[in-house]
Image 1 (cartoon, rainbow, N blue to C red):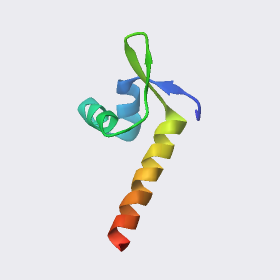
Image 2 (cartoon, rainbow, N blue to C red):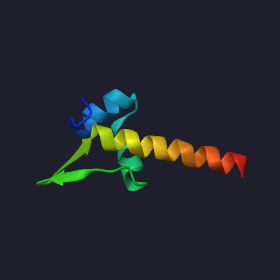
Image 3 (cartoon, one colour):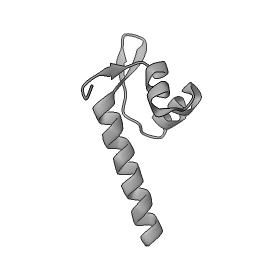
Length: 63
């Protein structure tokens, strides 16, 4: 599943959030790609991004 490409609805289901949250996260830097006029997400890149965000938050709390 690592390189699986997901729709917004599929990603929202996997992350257990609604699709509006996916839109907000994308606007805040979550990686995505356009396929024609459609937006898709590569699962491995999304996981990396989430990990980076949680590490950044951890460093902010410590500082």
